[in-house]
Length: 221
Image 1 (cartoon, one colour):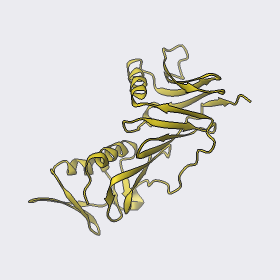
Image 2 (cartoon, one colour):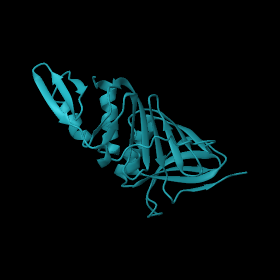
Image 3 (cartoon, one colour):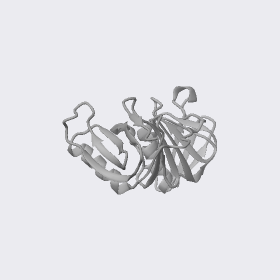
Image 4 (cartoon, helix red, strand yellow):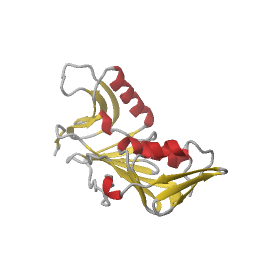
């Protein structure tokens, strides 16, 4: 088994969502944040052999960086990592000690809010969040236009930054904490239901992110 290129990038992204992970046989990898507000599924170019748990995914990736072209072989209790004369036996974790992704895939049926979120737009909004020190990302509809905004809900008079991303007939304000927008670089088709479940759909990766309870939605019927 080899973990290279895009697969390593996905693993680094998943480590920011949950420090631990459960690998299962095949080419689909899943993770879920410890507080269960983020679920992610990725379609890998590499296939995973065996089933095993890694407690510290960032450490595991750092170990892999010690090798140029490592070959991984899953043993009963450890991963054998070999490259030429170099070898590491990396011990697996007890699956009971990690938060594993749910086997159920959330269904965002008939989403009232849909738009395209490009990497360029997300970069601009996240940069604005940092520059203006704004802690939340909001998807806002005014019965005409959809905006993605950088906001501070606790300070209504604070500066805000907005980018137009689509159109809508509804009025809403779906709020996401900045630390929950942990998507890998790329363009996404975004669907959000009035119940506060969002689906960020990329080419080979999907994220389901729960909006904050302070979110609001008013259907224009």
